[in-house]
Amino acid sequence: MSPLLVALLALVVAAVALFTLPGIFLNSGSPGARSTPTPIAQSSGPASATPIPSPTPLTYTIAKGDTLARIANKFHITQAQLVAANPQIKDPNKIQLGDVLVIPRPSPSSISDTSSPSPSP
Image 1 (tube, rainbow, N blue to C red):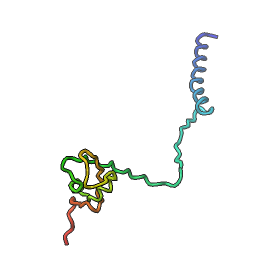
Image 2: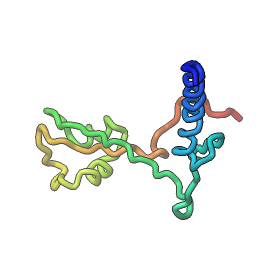
Image 3: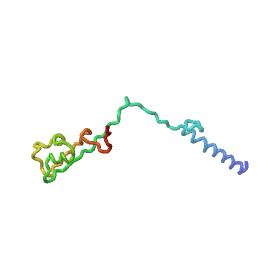
Image 4: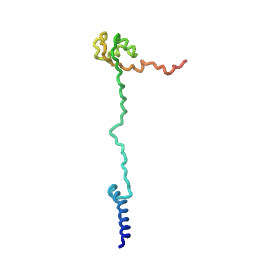
């Protein structure tokens, strides 16, 4: 057998091995079939609404001359709402300079919307 014929035969064997071996090892023996994973939606029970995150609380540090009434007016809330949001306040008439208060968000009904004009009759 001539060396050229041996080289040609070796080349054919190498080409067949190159194209069939990956298919054998990757796709259970069928060289032409390629399998890709398909995501499957799984139900973990009844669908529920996404919870609405609570806003980051607003805080205020008491400065010289502050009163609960002034602080409440500054943030458009009532003094009662301010005291309710701050259980550490034992006596509303005795607040300390440097204390940090939680400022509750005003309720939507107490905020006036000035961005759109009211309809005229």
